[in-house]
Length: 180
Image 1: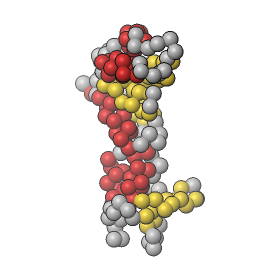
Image 2 (image 1 turned 180 degrees about the vertical axis):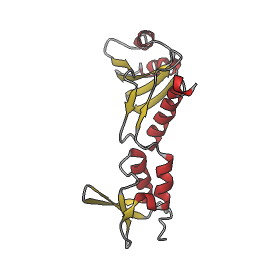
Image 3 (image 1 turned 90 degrees about the vertical axis):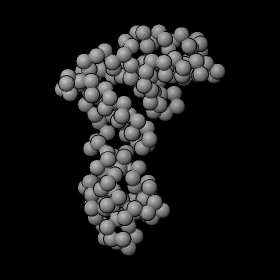
């Protein structure tokens, strides 16, 4: 198995900045690729084997080709008013379902972690704020801001959340004049 064939329970080590970490199961190594912790040049090693670059390990090379080189995506100004917002809320309790219904009614939603979402919508921020605020009590806290600097980045959100974020921002980027 010198080629780095994938076995999910197999243990691997990672070398970065002159330090070695591990062992990690192969499935976690794929998470590290998705999170940007392992890149093509990162040195990795399986028990009893020599250190080599991640791009020379077949299952990591496949994972590396499935990942955008960095978890930063350039978003050009859309040709439609559709944009993305970051939303944060600290809710007092039973209002959660009303808030989530209002949130999902705005458009495509990706939950980053409990209480934090990215929303892609055609609604202006003032209207989105008004709709979300209507579902809150005076004890609830809430923040909304457009992704207006056209640069979005993240790290260590986990493979599922990161894949959903990439899909959402690819959709926003597809609306840019550069893709017409």
